[in-house]
Image (tube, rainbow over the protein chains, first blue to last red):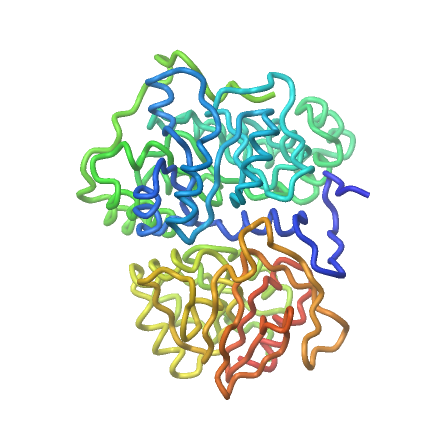
Length: 306
Length: 194
């Protein structure tokens, strides 16, 4: 019998068992309160680890360069991923294209610690996401609203990140998506049992997950924030809005002083409720990445995902 | 005496919420610890799982490293899980070259001893002196004890390697009891260790 997508009590293993729901979601829980940083080579990975990153995301180009250079964005070169794995002791994540289950198989074979089925890369399938239950490696997926989050969880995602708009250095979409998800979670807990069915239809999500959410008031997997965070205050904002950890992509290595900014964002994420500490670490960081207005974008990455 | 007791959970980074829940389930009053002022309020402490390199850096930047070392030297009851085990150990193998630890328990631990995430696993553990059958062990990129000093009591092993040990008022596990609903180890910590 395969694992059921809608959760419920997880039966403890009687003998060593890998790839369980609990160890997949468990690693995500161990990353909470932390910062996951995009890196493109071993040197950047070491800067990230030195700054206190809880994990690195290995990719060939940071989102702002993908935006600027265009072309099809794909899974990274295995050699580059191996180099980053060798450079650091913290978990290494890597991105596969939406629906590209063979890229995910390759990343699992490379023993990355998490696969990000990511809208930042060019989608490989415009109808289907990867059936993530078939893998031992855990997956993180992006979501712009609660329905998208629940659909990804039903496919086996062990971690959800609000998408934001990657590569812009503009936090507005991250805030929009985080508020959409947490706001609807609050609202669904007010629904009566008949209304939950209507919620499930409206969200295009499995009724079992909608009912569980209505009962518990929280997603069955952790919720992180991504897409456009560039400053310590951005990270603290995401955390105060209910994110449990943050992904920072272009925001660090496209800034003037990556090591100092990275460390400042780590400290602001830990002490997100203390404005004095956020103020202290925000001093003298040099210029942040330039940033883009959302209305001027040729491509909205967040629209990718079904 | 557990009821109402103020038990800190080091809340710099990592799996804090589940420990808070476990302690509350047992009637203790959990206190997230991020500053020296928070630490002064508690009479026992949980150091949760997370990334040990990150937690170590944040101990220093938050000004907690020194007061915590003093409290540990004074016999503060402490329960470290996974990264918490690493942070409390005497020596760390396969860590970063600059990785320091608090030396609150006389063990050397090896980081990621069972492999990467793909090798993370669940296994039932026989725990010495624990009634009620095997304990569900959840091992996530888990460390293992490579050397245990003479005063260290080994309470459980996997493949013969120690994964739950106690020395004085300090209990450390390579696995994550907080990720299960089994509260026996948190109870053991509160009632007998701390």
